[in-house]
Length: 118
Image (cartoon, rainbow, N blue to C red; front, side, top):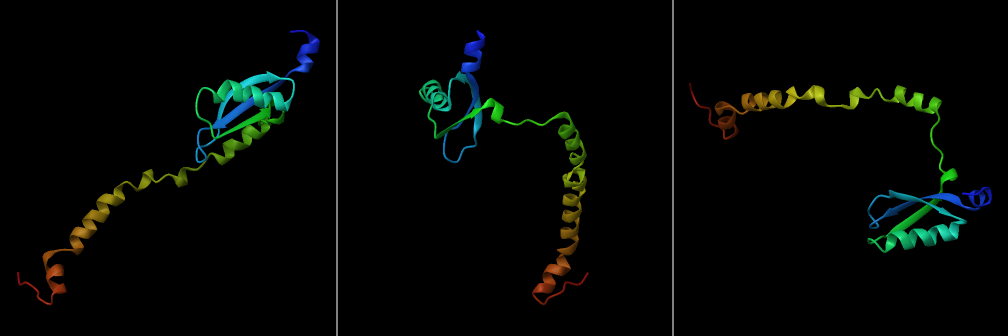
């Protein structure tokens, strides 16, 4: 590609969603001279293949990604073990035992005013 054509075309990223309730999904990249043609090219290449509710076309240089320092800060936020309930697996068994103790024969009969004698 010559230097002139390299400066003429810009890189775009295309996102779409299949229905109004669906999330946006990345689809592909394309080269276009401007925003309008990028949208037309995305529609021509994508909408004829499958149903689409919306298309977003974004210049690649408008998308900001995290630098290494920002990625390091995510590691501090990754300590979320307290949110996992895997340490409470024994509670189901304990609750079942509690319910069985609570609902013994004498307890149930006491609700009707009669207590059995053992």
